Amino acid sequence: MRFLILICVFLLTEYYAFQLFLFFFKDNSPSGKNISLGIYVTCTLIQLIFIILAMTGLNDSLPKQVNVIWGAMTFIIVLSKFIGGSFLLVDDLRRAILFIGTKLGMEHTFNTSRSKFLSLAALTVGSIPFLSLTYGMIKNPYNYKVFKVKLPIKNLAADLKGFKILQISDIHSGSFLFKEPVKRAIELINNEQADLVCFTGDLVNNKASEMDEFIDIFKQIESKNGVFSVLGNHDYGNYEAWPSQEDKNANFQRLKDVHKEMGWQLLLNENRKLQIGSSELAVIGVENQSASPRFPQKGDLPQAANNTEQAAFRLLLSHDPSHWNQEVTKSFKNIDLTLSGHTHGMQFGIEIPGFIKWSPIKYLYKQWAGLYKSEDQALYVNRGLGYLGYPGRVGIMPEITVIELV
Image 1 (tube, rainbow, N blue to C red):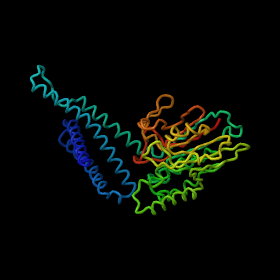
Image 2: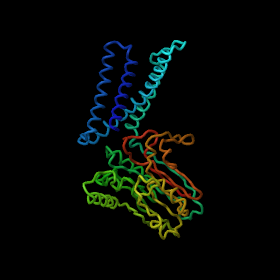
Image 3: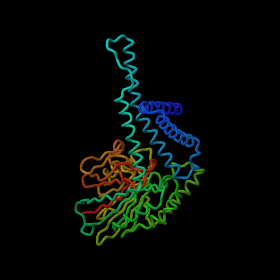
Image 4: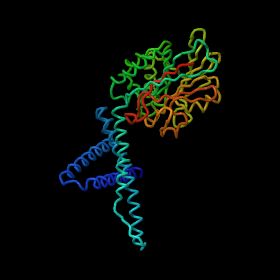
């Protein structure tokens, strides 16, 4: 039934997209109309071929770059047609109501021809996702931005004043199409000369092998006090159909080994204490913990935070920001700063500092990007270094965060 509904929606979308095409090219010369029709039919066939390949699984045999880019463009075209076609559907409903009115003998004569205004609106609104998503795919997948935050901490120890914590999150190495642009992120990270570097989960999409060609890149990250990391929901291999549980376990072990090969200290519901001058800073790391039952519930914060009460500053790494309200602000009020990721800022939104900060993800996550505070506790949600699904970003750029304690 779902498949039939999907087919009906697709056919309806194509019908209205073609109607829109006919409306705007009806006054063209015969040769111009034929050329336009040829371009339209060719694009539609290319789109349809990929959909068939994807439904049969044959797209997996394509080169990765071809598969991802072709699939993304197919999605963008279908989405644009659907949005534009929705306006023409509204127009047809309007025309149907007017036609019925004339048949019922209403006094006024109604014009039941296609509304030029709604047709123009369909073209305009339909072109917005096409242009923005295409631009975001071409320009922004590796358009890294460094976000710098000065974080006031009450009664901060003198040794920790000016301490720089650099955060990255959601690498999703399986999504990267190219290696060279990723190297620029490492350069930006090392240029900050951070006192501490933290990674807050989702190293891969599904398999540990996705990191094989990127280990040498990410092992170059430098930090005065080391690199600490935690796991995200994608790191457990739950979104892959494994031949056996043994294969899944082997993949998970390999993923943990990758952290070690890069020189990262993976915290699995545990902590490490750093001596900064005469002060102690506790880095606490939990496995994935979420307020949503859709994601792995592996975190054990009481165990992870054990014996850190005397630290001058307590830093928590927890992939999912919903964990902050779920447990941290309720039961662990002496955790000064929590670093999370997970949301990617949905890779789509509008951010104009001081004016607007919006993304559809805000309706799912109360804390979705940037800095949040609750009394003397702070949460920072990183927008992610990589991407997932859509191979680009619109308005929400890939992020490297530098937090300075003051």
